[in-house]
Image 1: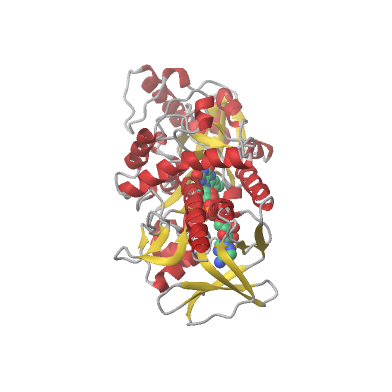
Image 2: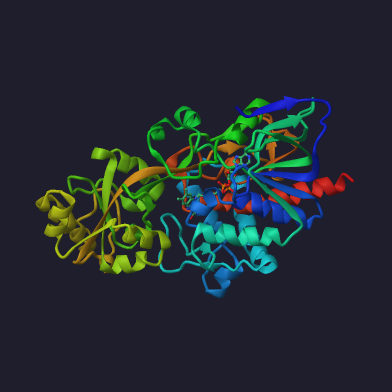
Length: 468
Ligand SMILES: Cc1cc2nc3c(=O)[nH]c(=O)nc-3n(C[C@H](O)[C@H](O)[C@H](O)COP(=O)(O)OP(=O)(O)OC[C@H]3O[C@@H](n4cnc5c(N)ncnc54)[C@H](O)[C@@H]3O)c2cc1C
């Protein structure tokens, strides 16, 4: 159980200005920003390599008003992006906080690109649910692995210490709850004591902690967890012990399209561009365009907790632009048939029901009928034989609730008073999705990892250098 030790003095083995707990996108971005202030920086990562959920992710970061968007002649604005986020979370997130994040992210993307040569481009061949404009930024590889490798390379080129195999087990604070440092556990059972003038919590949320999931997100307690195993929830446990304010702990990102039993993400671009989901009866059960996050719950509510993604050759070509999709195809997750009847037989669903479902989609596309689930079927995105299917299930990707932070990304008490020198970014901080699964707009995860990463690193670094 991670703890907090209260002590008036702390004798340490190592002394740094900024201790960053966690080496994912948030921690590495914070490390770059902190090192620019001249602070000595140590990133402590419990695993033996840098990965986090960041490396498991699709690596897509939404931002409005970047140089990358300009270069691709994409018109967008912070106001439209802000409105999209607030529409998705149904105005349940803090307005000023969301404005700050939306205003920060284009600066962070441009800074990483200009200063560290991390080139971003924008996916412009489809829109993710709820986004008005093309604004998903990605590195060349279009993967989270590509993103973490590029951040790692940038960090290693700076004067930053990165220690892997270092699990921070306890925070040490004085009687006023000012952080003095932390105690770390090495895999061989030995401890290290690190004193720090500022601590940045970049250790994500509690997706890998079944007890906390059962407590805060009971609907997902039996679901597949698809995020990183290191995300054990220490940030919120420390925060709770310190009396910090925790917000929206029931919020999370789910996903309704994980190939089953292969365990590979199947891009939601298929649904946005004309694909549909049917259950084991061959019937649609939702508006696929509401969002992939809430679709996790809808899929898990179907018989055997599964659904089939139905698409065609045109969409298979689109899917092959994504590494995960290619992996799914190589793993044999795709089922292909020349006719709807053959596909239904291969899936074990009733052919006549499945045929009726496809015929209804045709009616919605031609405007003869209105989809009872409210989806707008575009005529040019009709499905055509040969057909494909992938069996999928719903999963928990990461938690969105966490520590409330102020405009300097310092964690706060319930009365709004910030802690002196404890900061939080990425999944350790409360996100911008509100308290429900449906509040997650695609990309909200890396959005706060990178934007708050830069803010925490800059603020914590400056604070420590000013104290000399
Ligand atoms: C399959 C999948 C796809 C996704 N796709 C996207 C996407 O395209 N766009 C998007 O915006 N979001 C996406 N997300 C969400 C996104 O991955 C996360 O929101 C983001 O990576 C969080 O970054 P982070 O740095 O806060 O956490 P992480 O990247 O998880 O890093 C936290 C690190 O802290 C370490 N740590 C934890 N506790 C300790 C401790 N006590 N001591 C030392 N180290 C510790 C962990 O081991 C981990 O390495 C996806 C998530 C998944 C699972």
